[in-house]
Length: 353
Image (cartoon, rainbow, N blue to C red; front, top):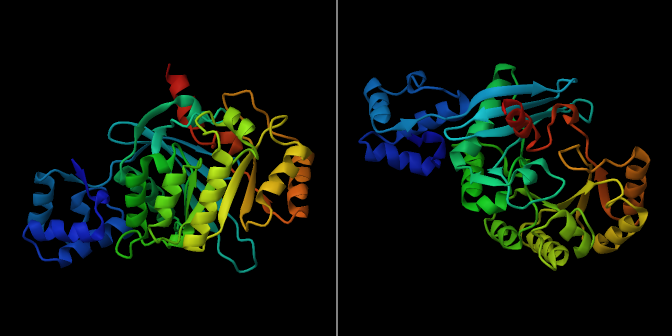
């Protein structure tokens, strides 16, 4: 089977021409795929019946994501789905935010996965505890967005932001991840603005440098979690001996190449990396480099890590801010519905055993 959501618009044009049909038929297919979200070829009414039959006979399909489980937060702002793909299941999350300004527009952010499981082995992450299973193809990534876009459209809403912060390490599945980004930002594809997309990585310098060369205006978030190599190695077992310096330098190169400010994500864990001493060390590391720190009180997972008290979080934030480091505490979404990446799939797997 060949999923039409894998094709870049220029590839779709070539496919149509190779089948013996005029180029404009590609525009009709793309318009339907990314604005009407058909489930079958019979729903693309603009195409002649013969062309629809030819596509089916040639083994082409439309999307592959089917909802098999759904949980919604108590406030209704976070929806987490377990979607069945051709060979596996994947988590995708919708997070909705009310306008921060009077007259502003609400945000609907989709958090997509790029892998099933993850080889990075972060000890505090539910996905990292699963181990690595497989990479997702670009069409599997796109299908996650399309599934929620269809749901939102029925409410009279639309996708405003996209974050690659779900299961897996995007840079370890670079080619499929970047193909999905290009499809989702293409004017004839999904058409989402590049500045509304953020790629989150544990910090693979070669991947960060490669992304900088794409000349895209997408955001970059690097998971730091520690201000020194000794502590980071305990939290991220795959980290190299100089990982902190390496990712700080990679972030600086990304900013110089793209002009886009880098965000360093920092998961706060009680008694591990949340002390005032560590906050001061982090301040010294990041002071003056123009980056932003996103503090994330840890979500409960299968590990033994606990989230810090509100007082500890605020003190940590205050130390960074006083040192001139741009810093915010992430607005929590979906804690009670296992919305941290990997948790829902793990919970469902455990129930089925």
